[in-house]
Length: 151
Image (cartoon, rainbow, N blue to C red; front, side):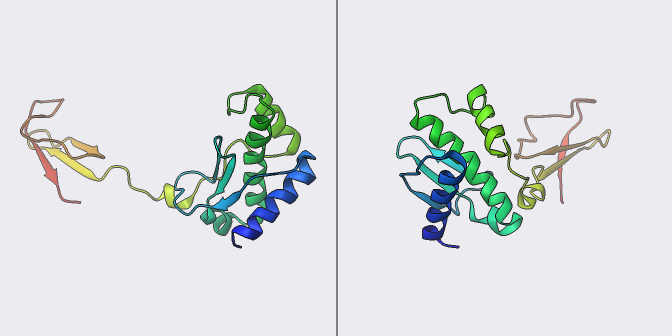
């Protein structure tokens, strides 16, 4: 599926579920990492993550489009369009869209704790996402010296 097909699909979903036209652009954005799609208020553009379409199929794509169209139509109508807004949640329920996208397997497999440090005295293990200065920090249990452990 390319951008022109996505544009056509978004226009169709907008007419079918909201009975309002979608007058702006919808594109695939491969740089989106943690989200299935996003609505950009200024240019009223909808961007969709193409990996979610490949991983989860057309049903999840339609749900994401409906979600972003809820933002779009509320914003165009000068009504609150943020996730916490009751109007937004009501419109989501009306069109049958999800508040959250399915989790991405890519994110589930990401290792957040890259560094492991072990205390030289009590052998307690500390896992950290960022590197720490072992000359400055010591073990919180016994004040022993920390050593970077090879993973």
